[in-house]
Image (cartoon, rainbow, N blue to C red; front, top):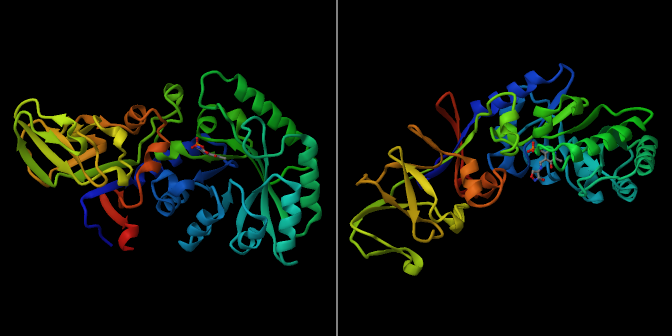
Length: 382
Ligand code: PMH
């Protein structure tokens, strides 16, 4: 396995393991941690992250849809996998076959799915409650009871979990969170019998509110070493260690004279004699055009991206002549300088979650542990 263009993402698996272990330490012994590895583990690589998380004490995994769950199963991951999003009733059989737990929230769905299951097939289901996210879930105790009654009388469904999701757990004002928690608690208490897993905690809740853990948490962003928000960063119980860094190498260096222009639109003009380098990364890698002007690290210095970002390349202004082959860090650390995921998110007026998801699969992921490369995922030449 290799890659043939010097642009790569490095994933520090030790940091993933550290973030999981530190979170597990905060949980009472019977509480389970589900590592949220949807969206290719927020762009980090689902299989490698899943294995690191499971090795560090995660009990199970959570994904957005069945294809993502199957991809884990294809990699011989046998741990519990929960699909958090919607599935088609007609795919219940696939879930049964591969021991994938599904999220349910409609009686009609259960009735339809049942028709697709053979009498001996069983699907584990987690009932989702909508307590204020307004996304998926049953909204009332009556709906919940109706669903649970149907599941209980059907030999093809196993009532494995009950859950909800918070809309504002990463904010300092906790009123809306408390309201959602109150509603969820009432829904849990309305049941005669609790399923094996009752869960509502995302990263922010896992790290802030022990009282809202029930008996499982779903850890996403914090596992990747990123804070759920700037607001709650000071409240985190341990310093998170980011796992994702993005690097490239200079492929060309030239002296530009005052007045010479750079890139499409010729929008950048050298103000004097300048050293300019070309980097083999562009908007098709997810290093989008809005990042024009963003700083990157070369030889431990912060230097700006100049001119428009092209599809596969962009240009930077160097502090002095550097040779082709010099490593440039776009997200991560060089010497005493660091460009964080939050820096890039701020520049793009988005959240840190979105940034690693944006970096496309044509950028190989290089997995490292104890400073050594364990393996490389490059779908282009897989
Ligand atoms: N549970 C559910 C249902 C989720 O949708 C998510 C993240 C998590 C747990 C993990 O949250 P965390 O990363 O804050 O720990 N879902 C999303 C989302 O839909 N958009 O951004 C994050």
